[in-house]
Length: 446
Image 1 (tube, rainbow, N blue to C red):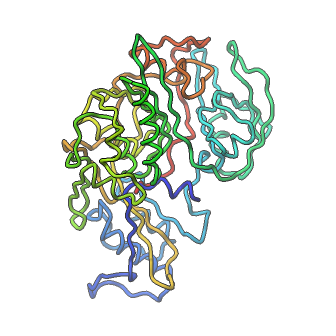
Image 2: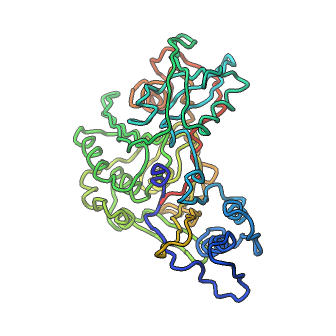
Image 3: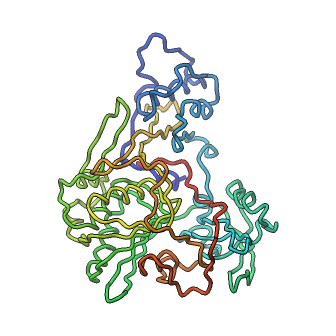
């Protein structure tokens, strides 16, 4: 479950010493180890940290199973809080990407044909090692033909299995060719590399960075990659965050510090706003970066900063959390041109709440929304997603080309000022996305 746990946003872990610090005499008392006692601990934790604590029911049903009890406490505005039992892997959120290392979309073409397109294959993942490639078309799952009527149901069933047999082919001249069977087993995907390129367009050198996620400890790699772009003399930057679920806010702050001009160690980066207990917390770039103990310091990073006035950021509906923070929190310091699709809308952050007594008495972990996040200008509140300046449908041209290819739809649009001038063989207008596997699992960033 490591892939689930690296998608957290503020580098804090709360160590709870007791099941409850509530001295209210009206608080019920339950036998230790009972479901009711665990639920009482969950309630107390949520009262203390939960962003919408004031909206929690006053008299919840303590007899409910723990996951159901937790859900009964949540605000209707909350899409992301969750709870897991560390001794039961079945309680963790499941997704195709985390289980197998790939993602796909069910797409309706202009002629109403429905196809299932593999859009992402993680390096060194089970899918990668099985031979799955970006751009392939899935025609069958476990031998059953996918049709317009069943494509969404069949595709969504992949996450409910531990091994899946895919029949795939390549898109060529409006049809699928070269079909073959690929077996993909549930397994672990390794940390993803940052992809960097330098393109030349109209006499300018344009840097390209594809950043898959923001794990802690990535500042050395970010510094190296951006330093290479600076040494190459890039004058513009295309930042590809289209599949980036998020991760460490400190790593996101480090990337942001490497792009614009005019920053100092005192430049404000982010504002966290919590409930009456959490209050408001403001951090500069330097302060937020330093929350990652493995991070390079702000001054070291700024030595390789590109010093740009403008950045183009590529996004999709699975651009989330810390990746959205990059978009929003660069805006006070430079022109941000967003291209692609509206982001997920995760304008919040949190940390893990768990029992750290020795011996531990409660195996459940609570992952609540604790803060709303805002940029240096106080702008935030993008729970409906951040809309692009220029809408570009990644599937308007098939087959999908590799990430980093200058003729790939989003990259081509960025290089050509937003106008699709790809040399790819087919252009599809009126393409609709019916289903996407990479609606992110409910995860908070740390």
